[in-house]
Length: 362
Figure: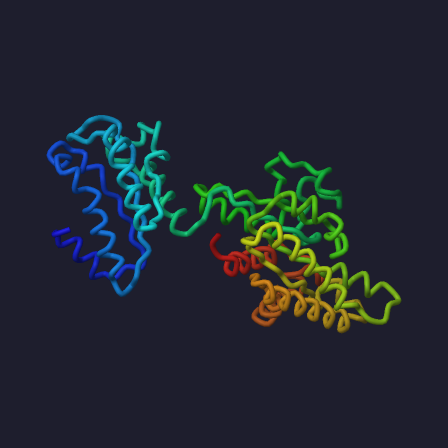
């Protein structure tokens, strides 16, 4: 603690401090001062805690040492150092990051038996990352909705999830924005082992989601839930003889599904998306487009309010497509949405980009 590096660390005024010390302490010339190890660590932690930045301090178990090299001794790490770290953590109410267990039985990742290679270092980094961010590996991200989400996953054909193919990796996510989102996160963060689930079913309305929520959502226990619904609700109304769309009932039913998921998992990250429509392709022949457009936008406002009430991320896809059609007026009107409702590959790409941008990290 008399070293310049320690003073530099204090002067940095950190918000987070990760202390990984103990490996070199096991060398014979250092371990003769073992009775000072615990008090020295307490003094170091207290020095950081006294800073104006009030940092969070984490203590790390040393990584596994695979031979007695340079005097470093894994037996001392296990039987002496780790118990001392635990004692300091208990006394000062600190969180401990275990770097010893994750590196056990991985001798091939330690070329000199002590220092990790890049793959071994990645394991250490991932353990620290998980502790600091509280992010776990294997998070389950579930998308639910209608045909826009479905993308013909697992054979499609409007079949229920139970009748679809869940093993064929060629079609497990379908073809659409959901597939592109999964590809982004799984490709960029393989060490997090994300598990993506598509539960979109073509033609479905909110009432249909209600009927399968228990099986397709609650039983899957997602950590992140993305919902895009409403297009078919409005479409059915447009084909009916009803005079007004019951937005109050629709909002209550939507909120009830969200409440059920939050009751099961209060830490659930929610991504609620607005339905959308544009006057392109076959939609241009619809004499009642103005009414449809108005209702879709109102449904989006309902979703936005529900998102605000429950602390969810709201993705305004109607705004996205409005922006795209305004920005690229010279393109064919079918470039982004080929029939006014369903995205083209370009449209799905833009949806995925917006989803990733707003959903962020998890």
